[in-house]
Image 1 (tube, one colour):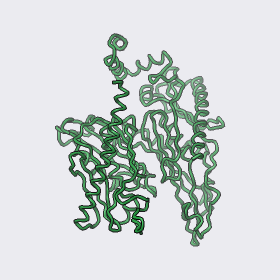
Image 2 (spheres, chains in turn blue, purple):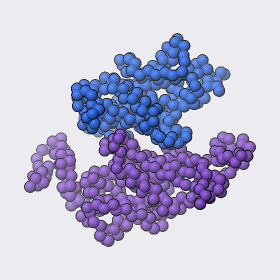
Image 3 (cartoon, one colour):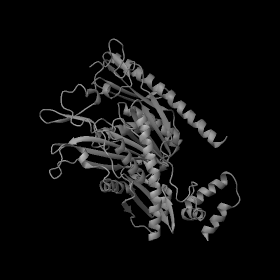
Length: 243
Length: 309
């Protein structure tokens, strides 16, 4: 199948190879949560809610008294994919993604400032069209910022692939299931450090570098967008406070 | 007495942020006296009258991948319902009827009370209530879900997700289920020679060689749509459409469901400290009638907005 049209150079959804999908982020969608955000990348729609810092609920899980415990749960709505999913959480993929998101966010939260407490990050996928992992991490970053939890930097994530000898940015579901390689990168934006890097399928080394660079560019663009949203939100809060 | 002292402290001197904190502390430490003082003035902390419900909005079709979906907000309570249709073989006792499966989820994002490993207690209760009301109201005629008698029919999986839990969960859930059924668009279906039924997307409609089984039957005709109203009772006061805080403080809730012809579909008062006399029940029914008219208008508006698009 032609994932990149040889005549026009466009992909199946009309994007150019280095073009990301339409981004949309919104803070404060769940009023009961300490921090929450809705993040959309094209048709992938994800809600993240953060509860914390609050009291540790399961003392057995608390390894280190000097740091906050970060927990994460990823679940997909039954209707989020084309076929109705039978087991939305507790299956291997969800457990793996929960672990990945937790460890990615742990890298940037200043856990030493909140000892003996727990920070819960819950992510719910409402619509899945490829790149759910990245959308979840971006939503979690926004939600943590909304909750006012101290972080080292903004973490953003984006995926990139390589089909029809072209590096492609931000794969959707059709491109992801094409069987080509899928590189997901998560970076700390300002510090320019990579915290998450996952790849499956085979790639020659120099192609891998190109694809990874493309993904990092995507992450930086998302970081720019996220920064704008947080700035807008802070301005609104300032207005409401009347200062 | 402690209560009086706290009252005086809260009412008294300090201005600005200190007074705000004292009110918040009073609200947390003595919730019942806090509400009692409001009830004396026939008002609630969010400035609503005792018999007015929160702003309700319905938005149809937020989930593009589902056959029917709706997002409902009552105040801050948010519910997302989606319906997916799959083909199945009907049972032998009812060969010309489809079926509906309802599941209600409260994922941990919706409330600080819900944690992984400790699911919300009310979730299965609301799930069962939803199923019972949808079945007993007869809103969906199961015969409309039949494709080929005895061989193929639709099973509608209705999934309702609570995205924000702030009281009146059943109301919002039922409303979102009703709205999702209103939005439901049955996919085109055709049959191969071996008798296998498969769905046909709208682009393939002209190109398919096989006979399209249900070309004219794309939407369900819903009759007697149920509309709910939950209220809490506290000593002769009835508070309509409670928030999560009001539900926790007052403890006794009544849910009434009426259909568009003002027939009583369901009454649900699961025990509780407050006792409901006949007058209170009659008063609740009156309030539910009024709410039913409001909800009917809101649902009709949202349908016409969708049709304009």
